[in-house]
Length: 68
Image (cartoon, rainbow, N blue to C red; front, side, top):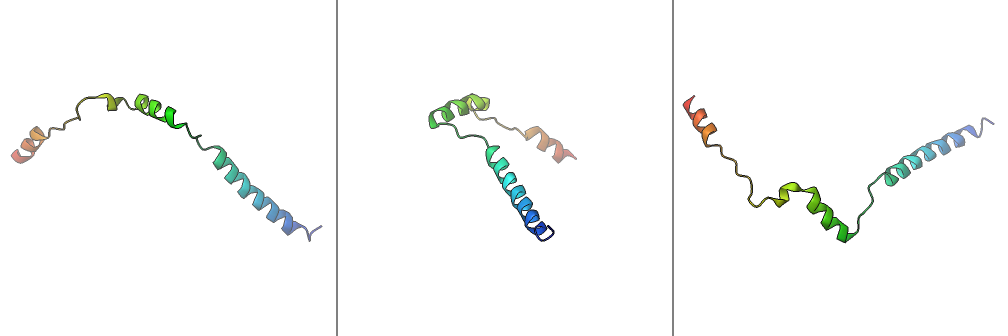
């Protein structure tokens, strides 16, 4: 009986590693068809619908830093 114990231990380790890999692969998100990906990207990004890029104005902050 004790002669089989190392083999049982190795079997448990291989099973643990296999179960971890299977859980990671099954937990990944599924790939979407190419046509559906374009529609979901447009709906998911509300900033893409804006006409102009946002403009950052640091003029006042730079003027305040120069005064100090």
